[in-house]
Amino acid sequence: MILQASHIEKSFGHRAAVAGVSFEIHEGEVLAVVGESGSGKSTLLNCVSGRLRPDAGTVSFRTRHEGVKDIFALGEAERRLLARTDWGFVHQSPEQGLRMEVSAGANVGERLMALGERHYGRIRACASDWLSRVEMDPARMDESPRAFSGGMRQRLQIARNLVTRPRLVFMDEPTSGLDVSVQAKLLDLLRSLTRELGLAAIIVTHDLAVARLLAHRMLVMKEGRVVEQGLTDQVLDDPQHPYTQLLVSSVLQP
Amino acid sequence: MIRVRNLHKSFHLHHQGGAELPVLEGVSLDVAPGECVVLDGASGAGKSTLLKCLYANYRATRGTVEVAGTELTTASDQALLELRRRKIGYVSQFLRAIPRVAAVDVVTEGMEDRTGAREAAEQLLLRLRIPIRLWSVPPATFSGGEQQRINIARTFIRRMPVVLLDEPTASLDAENRITVATLVNEAREAGAAIVGIFHDRTVRDAVATRVVDMGALH
Image 1 (cartoon, each protein chain N blue to C red):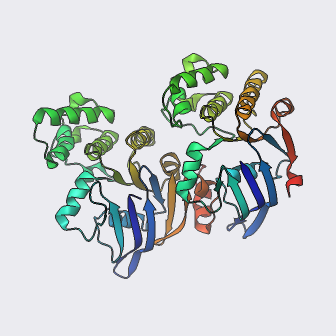
Image 2: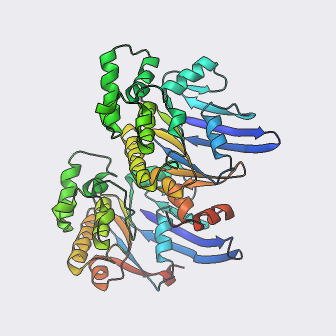
Image 3: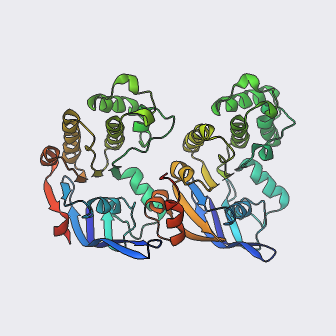
C-alpha cells in the first residue's frame, strides 16, 4: 500500500460531495476514478492529495523513509514538502499547474531548486532531459509556456511534475482539455512514463477509454459514493451496478 | 492447474427491465498441466463467458474458480493482477491496439524478464509471418489478421503456465492457423494448461487433448 483513504467525507454547504469513500492504492498501480461531473471525483482527489481537508476520514501515505503518515496530521510545511517531492499533481488545465510567467525550462527546473539543487548546469541539463522525455524540443526551453500549444503545455506540466521522481501522481482529467488528435499522444506518453518509472497514479476522468488504456483498477463514483470497483476490464466488460451499466452502455465501446 | 466448481454466471441487466440472463449454470471443469481443452457448443452456450471467468474478466455469480493456485472469486485485485502478470496468458478475439506503440514493443511489453525479449519477439513475428517492415509500426493500422497475430505473439512470448484462447485463429489464413496450432502444442508440451475456443476443425483437431461440450459441463 502506498496510500490509503478511509471514510472520506466532504460537504459544501448542505451538499455532500464525497459521502464516505475508502480505497487504497499500491506501488506502481494506476487507479482510475470515473463518474460524471458532480459525482465528487475531483473533490475526492483534492482530499486525498492533501489540497482540501475532508470533514471526516483519514488519508495515510507511506513515505520513503518514515513509514506511514496521516497526511492531515502533518504540519502545513511537511505536507507541502511531500507534495513537492513524493507527489505530483497534474491539473486538467496546464495554466493551473504551470507558472506561465517563467520559461519552460524554469517550470521544470524550479522543482529541483525547491529540493535544494543549486548547480545551474545540472538543473538545466535535467530540465532539458525531461523536455525530451515528454517529446518537447529542448531547444525551446527558454520560451514561455504561452508560446506552446495546449498539448505541449500539458506535456510540460507532466515534466514539471515528474522531474522530482515522485512515487504517486494525482491527475485531474489530464487529457480532457485537448483535441482528440493530441489526446492519443498524451495518453501514450502517460502510459509509458507510468510503466517505466513504476509510478502509482490516481487519475480522475469521465472518459472510460482513458481508464481502459491507463488504469489497472477503477472506482466508479456516483453522488459522492463509490458504487462499483474492480479491475478495469471487469468493470468495463462486466459492469454490475445499474449506474455503471448505464455509463458503459452510453459510450462507444472503449 | 484449473479447477472450476459449480460456476454460475448470469448477467443482471438493470436497464433492460431488470432481466436476469443466466449463461453458466453450475459448470465444473478440471484442466491439468499439459492438457489442451477445447470448448465446444453452439453460439450462446457460454464458451467465451467461461473463458472470461477463468481470466477474472467476468466475475462469477456463484461457485469457485481456481487458477494456478489462486481462488479468483475471493482474490484481491492485487492478487488477480499478479496472477495475470505471471501465470495466465489470454488471447482475446481482437487486439486492443495501443496508439503509437510499435508492434515489436506491443509483443514484449508484458514480459517480466527483458533479457532477450526483443530477439524472442522477432523470432515469433517471423514465425507468424509479420513482414519485417511492419515490426516498428503501431498495429492500429494493421489488418485484422495481422493484429490477431500480434495478439497471439504477445501472449505466447511469456510462456505462461495457463493459456486461454478465445478464437485466436478466426481471422487467419490456413498457413498461419497451422503456425498457431504449433505454438499451442509447444506450450502444452512445455507443461501449460490450455483452454481454448476454435471453430476451425483442423486447428481444433491439431491441438485438442480433450474436447468438451458446454452442455456436458453442467
